[in-house]
Amino acid sequence: MKHSKKFSMLAIGAVAALALSGCAASDESSSGGTLSEYDLSGVSIAVGSKDFDEQLILGEMMVAAFEAAGAEVDNKVNLGGTNVARAALESGEIDIYMEYNGTGWTVHLGQSDPSFDPEVLTSGVRDMDLAENGIVWVGRSPFNNTYGFASSPEVTEANGGAFDLKSMMEYVRDNSDAVVCMESEFPSRPDGLILTETHAGIDLPDNQQLILDTGIIYTETANNNCDFGEVFTTDGRIPALGLTLVTDPGVNILYNVSGTIRQDKYNEAPEAFDGIIEAVLAPLDNIKMAELNGKVSAEGEDPAAVARDFLVAEGLID
Image 1 (tube, rainbow, N blue to C red):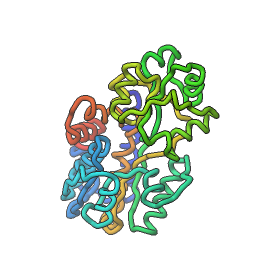
Image 2: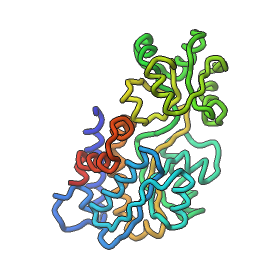
Image 3: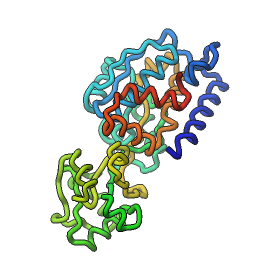
Image 4: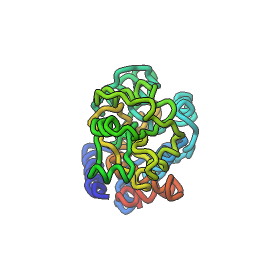
């Protein structure tokens, strides 16, 4: 992908800088990959995840990364939904899983009006969750797996390329037979359709809304039965099916990912945890994450194999 080399070099540079500033590093050569410079020998850690493809990949990345640094890892990837994973973290069943800043702010902390600046949002979640719950948020992914829309191949071609949210709504307004396909709850969610309608200053008529199950939206949009489909922006089916993301200028709530780790576990090796998690997340922009997700959701590859191949390709492990 066109950004992978750039982010790979950033990841390696970030790790090197952290090592020079006093990260715990082994005396071993770097033949084990960049992450072998960190020393988690003697540290045991239980790694969990939620139960969808992106989370499985991210969880397996953490398993492989911590093992490369010498930790004893208990693999508990694929626990269940958000509430299950968070409860496991709070109870001590697991020590870490990857969570989204928007979810942390609105679900776990019960806050409203999240910032649309990813660092401001993550910092706010980090400070509050540590103070209230003893949960440490580490790193922040470039990718933002938020709500969005994708246009069908036919509509994209007719438009001469990608839409943005305003031009999408203008297209639907000007074409009475145009259809926008969405999940059942999206039109009524406070972080759903209303954000796009407010941004564009255009309401979507009921007769141009088609409610479908999540998976069907992708295939029906690819088959040009939906002019636009509501999607999750890093879903691997977007590139696999030739869909085009509608450009979002910052309308939908942010969902960047960070490692969430219990404070007592984090305190065992804070510099190593910081360096490892930040190095793994650094190359993961939306394009790369969607590519990796597609290997699982569209091509049927094993999440653990996809995760390990990514870490090897980035020079983080051998």
